[in-house]
Length: 194
Ligand code: ITT
Image (cartoon, rainbow, N blue to C red; front, side, top):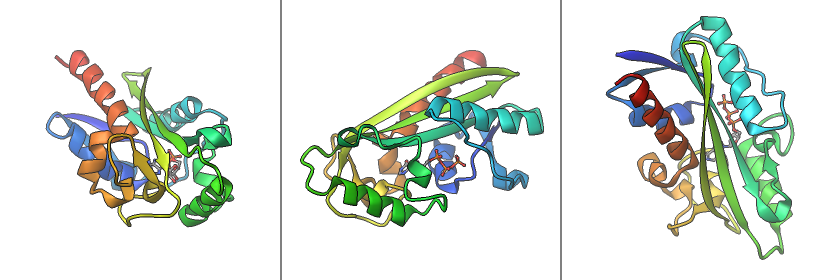
């Protein structure tokens, strides 16, 4: 079975993505490989950071790998938190503080529309390929649900009345930005390996 490293330290992402690729590809996480060093995300755009994560792991291992970078963009906040999603409330990457800041900034705003954007970067046989996935939706007034991670408890995808925080990850995968980007990755890999 073809092996691919998923260049992420976020185990929630691994949990969502692994079942989508199961059967055809063996996904190895950085934790399983004992690669615990921080991966830099120095850039101001999501695609550049996705590339940087995959490039770092490819240089370290020389193996086929993919990464992904995700941001939440809120339209009435001019796209914030965007590329700063992980460190919106400060460098400590604290989910709860990030959500508090977001809900605070949206207080009194009627337009609460938002989207998650994911860019996956695959490095296959030394060549780089990018795939994008988007999920449109809106931000709730308060947190709902304790499943998922990050901003899941305040994001309702279009087509549902639940937040991602109220969904098991299989249900989130029916709507999610990550799922859509990974679907494109899978179609590409199927062509490459047919
Ligand atoms: P890696 O860089 O190791 O992959 P990360 O958690 O730092 O993991 P990102 O930079 O891609 O991941 O994500 C930025 C933040 O956006 C992340 O910390 C979460 O708070 C949030 N986020 C990403 N995907 C999300 C999702 O599907 N649902 C809710 N929040 C999400």
